[in-house]
Length: 113
Length: 114
Image (tube, rainbow over all chains, first blue to last red; front, side, top):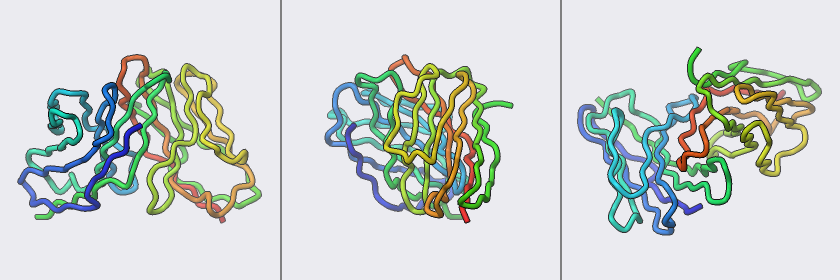
C-alpha cells in the first residue's frame, strides 16, 4: 500500500473551515484514499473515502487532485468536538478479500474557541 | 446495541493471568479485525478474520490467541502477558467484497499488565 504524509499538527478556530492536507504521491490506480479520525482514547471513526472524484458527506468533504497524488479533507465548520487525530490512509484490496489499512501518525487537529 | 461493542472497557491483569477480550458487531459485516495501539505509536493490525477464517496474523506473539466463532463475534484470548503488552486493543469490522474498506471500530479495551 502507498504511504501518506501528513503534517503532525494543525490549529483551527471554531466555526472556520479546517483543511487537512495529505500527500500520497505513490498511490496506484486501484487504491482509495480514506480518512479516519480518533478522538482521545476512543476507537477511530470512519469519515470519508474516495477514488478519483471529490466526495462529500454529512461529516466532511474530500478533495482529490487530478493526478491523485494529494488530497484535502475539509471540515466546513469546525467545532471543539472535532479536535482529534486525523488519519489519511491509502488502501486497496489487491488480491485480498478484506481491507488492509495501515495507520500512520496522523495530524493532530486542535480546534480552539 | 448498535455498531461495534467491546468488553471489558478496562482490564488490569497480572502476568500469570488468563483473560479474554470480547468484540461484537451489530452491522452484519463479514470481516473483523484486532488492532493494538500502544502509547504514542500508530495502530498496529494484529489479526484479520474474513468470513470467519483467519486471513492475517501480523507476527503477533502466541500469548495472544484470537477466536472468531461466527461473523458477529471476535475474541482475543490473553495469557502470560508482559508489561509491554499494555495498550488499547481495538476491534473493527467491515463489509468486504464491495471494493472499498470502511472499517467501523469499537471503543477499545484499555489493558494494563502489572
